[in-house]
Amino acid sequence: MLKNKFFSFILFLIITYSASFIGGSVTISLKEPWYSELVKSNYNPPDWIFAPVWTTLYLMMTLAIWFFWHSKNRDIKTIYIYFIHIVFNTTWSIVFFGLHQILLALVVLIILISLIIILILRFKLVNSISYYLMIPYLL
Image (tube, rainbow, N blue to C red; front, side):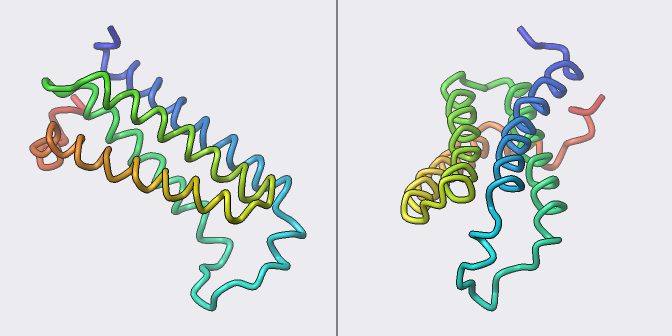
């Protein structure tokens, strides 16, 4: 099942970037004028930085799940956690930018951060060597 590395990479890429597409679509269409009127910290990054950072982040997420999928000790529970994480990732944009619910977005963010920590720990158990040996995975 999904042993082909190229096909599995494309599939994970599509799934992961679907979350980005949905979240981005909600953000673009529903954030203004509400977001501009919020009082933001001086440390709030400029708007132009978000596209390259999130594009890179989603690529790294895709690579992480792909490396995990092709590892010898993978488990399906971690794959399910990854997909739940993707749902919460998308949900945050909908709740914050679409529904303008800051407190609920904070709750979603806490859940999302918890899922990310769980994934880091689970990926680390299986992929600790693959971070240093990425080239063989690409062949």
